[in-house]
Structure formats: structure tokens, C-alpha cells
Length: 384
Ligand SMILES: *Cc1c(COP(=O)(O)O)cnc(C)c1O
Image (tube, rainbow, N blue to C red; front, side, top):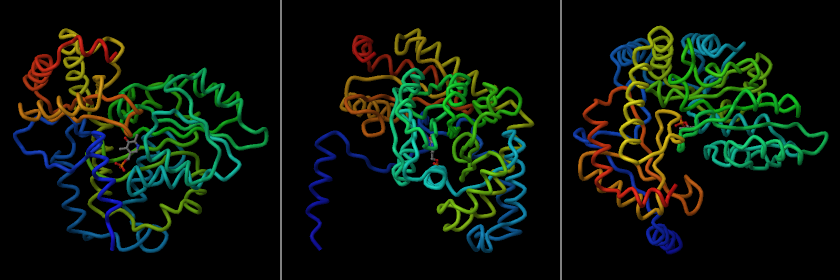
């Protein structure tokens, strides 16, 4: 078999500073790129519940959800999620990527119209593409542009607005109250991806930005994952009984895939219970985030406008610059991911700092000082 085409593609990735490779993070490195925002991936209560579930129920779920893969534990987890998110029902998926592709492929059909924030997560793009619906991107967080996009919807089409709540690369989020109003005026359904907001935002239950901004009842479908702040693996979607019943019957990624293993289900249940009961980790995350903001602002690395959340983007001029800085930080004991196209739009690049409740003050201050020494602020000003 001739692999020369793929060899050339690999050479092209390298040439265009797009080369990626997997790399294990050694223990001594301070990890500022992980999504383990609350440090729950190593929490004893989660680990213990996963061990016990494995011992009692085994390693595998033995089938897809509509065959033999539905356990009492997963039904219980879905009830917990519905109560947490303030919806009638919820459904568990195997990963966030799979959930988004499956949900959008199911709810959309050709002829439907989707208004789509241009920085939405890749899994949302793939779901829309697979559905053959018409779609229009609007400028990132620009709800005026969203309204203009909706004017292009054919009169008789079903309409959906699809957006991340907390954006995975820029750490910012839309004015969800205004977005809900626009959806009502245009008779549009809404899918919100809370992957990075669950466990971080939410006034009492810490379930995400829909709770924080008090729009939960007006969102058609709220999806999220167990794989970021919840520390484990898997995903969910929450909504009305009607929508969840529909997905059970129609979402191919749900129907044709083996259900999550008992350990993942048990860990997710333990994580949601812990997050609802105990705000300590979330408070620590916000304390660390405020420290990082103030340190980074003092050194001129970011401006006030970048201070939205635990995800802090440092805009840079080029992919080369991002890769160089990321490597230099690695050499000094800090892992900060360089984010390049296609994850961000062409001709942009950034360092994405993600703060965790587990970071120490020393690590946060150390990172900021190291970064400031590596990066003359003049370069940054140009990047802004
Ligand atoms: C990580 C992420 C996903 C995918 O979730 P996985 O469980 O990792 O597959 C989906 N949407 C957003 C916004 C994400 O950041």
C-alpha cells in the first residue's frame, strides 16, 4: 500500500507549524493545561465509588443502552442529572464528542436551519455537518450577528441556536438571557454545551452557566460532560421528557454504542453529589483564578477583558511563538498548551492557561513570573 500521500500530509503539518504529537505529562510538571478544574480526577470519594462499582458489577456494561447496557445505577445517575440541571429528564452518553454529534444528527434534518457561534467546539460542528441542515455562523458572542443570521432562516424551517456556554479556548461566554430572548422571538430551539462550566458556575448547585444566569427552563437541551470539572469520563444531555424520549429513539451515537462502564457511572454520580453538597473545591478554584488574573494583569500579560473564568487565553502573534513559549515553559516545569489553528481561527494562536483548585499559590505566581520573563509585553500588545 502506498502511504506517500499521508507522508506528504505529515510533512505539510510540520512545515505549517501544525504538527501535533501525544506527550505524557511527568509528575514534576505543574499542569496548567488540564481540564481537571476541581481536582476531582484523583478525589478519594470518586476513586472509591469506581472501585466498588467495578467489584460489584464488573468492568464492562455488557451492551448498548437499549439492549443489556442499562443498569439501575445509570438510571439513578440520569435522575440525579435531571434534578441537578433542573430539567424533567436526562440521558447519559459515552463522551461529549459523541453526545454532540449524536444529538445534532438526531434533532436536525436537511432543510432545518442552525445559527452557530463560529468558535463552537469541533464536536458541535461535526454534528451539524452530519445532519445536512443549513447553517450560518455568527461572530463569536455577537448576538446582533446571531439575529442577522436568523433572518436567513427559511420561513417554514425548524431553527436551532447552538453554542458553548463557557468557550473552551477563550474562556468567555455569551449573554444567555439575551440569547434566550432572541430564540423566543425567532421560534428557535437552543442547544447549550456546558462542558467547561459544569462544576464551575451555578449559584447553588454549581451545575453550569444556565443555572448561574437563570435560563435553565428556557434551554431546549443542556449538554455537558463528566470529563472536565467532574474529573471522570462520559457525558449527559438534560431537557424535557419529550426531547429525551426522542433522543433515545433517534440518536445513533446513543443507540449503537456500548454503554459506559460501571466505574465511570459511579464516579459521575459521586462527582455530582459532591459538587452539589460541598462548594469547597469550586471556591478554591475561583480563589486561584482570581490570583492568576491579578498576577497576569500586574505583569501586563492579560487585560481585564480576558478575566472571565478559569480558562485564561494569552493571545499571541503566531503559531511559532505559541509553540516556542509552550516548549520554554515546559523546560521550566510548567505545562501550558499552545493552541493553534484549526482549534482557533487561521492566523491566530494562543497559550491557554487553565486554572485548577489543586494549583498552589507558588505554582500560579511561579508560572506568571516565568511567562513574563519569556515574553516581552510589547509582543503581547501587538497580539491583542
Ligand atoms: C471537551 C469538550 C467536548 C467533548 O467532551 P469529551 O467528553 O472530551 O468527548 C465537547 N464540547 C466541549 C465544549 C468540550 O470542551
